[in-house]
Amino acid sequence: MARFGLLLKSYRGDLEYARRLISSFHDHNPTGLQMYCVVPEEDVELFAPMAGPTVSVLSEEPLAGYFTAEPVHGIRPGYINQEIVKLSFWELDLVDDYFCIDSDAVILRDLSLADFIAPDGVPYSVLVEDNELQVEPAYFNAYWESREEAVRLIADTVGLDDLVLRTCHGHQVFSSVVLRSFKDDFLATRGWSYLDALRVAPYEFTWYNMWLQKTEPNAIHQREPLVKVFHHEAQHLEYILRGITPDDIARGYLALVVNSNYARDLGVMPIHESKPESLSHYLSYGEVGSLLLAKLRSSMRRS
Image 1: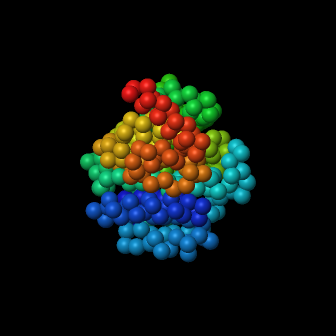
Image 2 (image 1 turned 90 degrees about the vertical axis):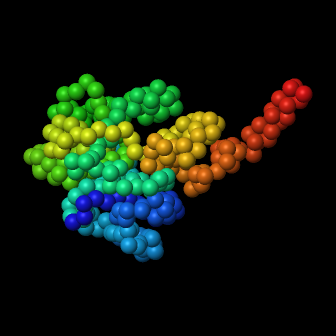
Image 3 (image 1 turned 30 degrees about the horizontal axis):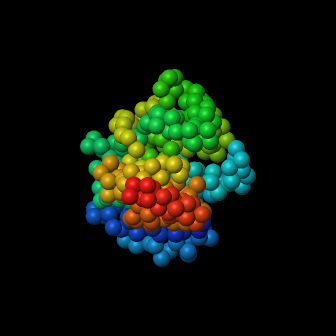
């Protein structure tokens, strides 16, 4: 069993995202960390060319006994099953601890074990209140209230009595010690599977985080998010307009994500683009024309 690895759960619909991520992983992996790319059995051949000395392409089939063929909370089975893979990957005995990274991430700077594991050998824990998202009107109106209700439900279900709820949206370092405790000491005592927990609330990272805080099978070394995620268009546009580049983001984060849940129709966007090139993904031809006309009028008024 290896000490640590990165877990990428993907599928053919995210092939180009995964290809970009793995390319950036090769560019920023000087210490030879291992990435495990887990895909459906029928997609293994498609992803196989990405395999190499530091990237293993694996079938999800050994974990398929935990899967569902039915939607959960209106969420398609494939999405729920990828949550199950993240919670159960430790059972394959490949790594002690693993960092879950999404296909639409791009790694920005060199990685090392010290980014993920504290000096005492315990994984860091990404635990935040997400207050900046609570004040975002677009995010609050679409997601906040229902997610907050689910997060509180998970905390209550595991018996965590805390007014301050700390969790993360993703990109957590999972400890096999914590996950084994979650399975043996929480799920098994109720006769539950991973799927049963997700039927209560479909937030795999919050189940992990609340159980960690409730029982502390590991010491908790809290960190802020390791990945900068643009959850909606306005967040990304703000950075573009302020001239914040990926090199700037790399000073605070290991990677960035332009969330494909909202940006998929825009295609796999290159991250190292000029401000006009970046804005062009969001503007229609009509809006570009209006912008040029407004710019012309502004220039004429100043002259």
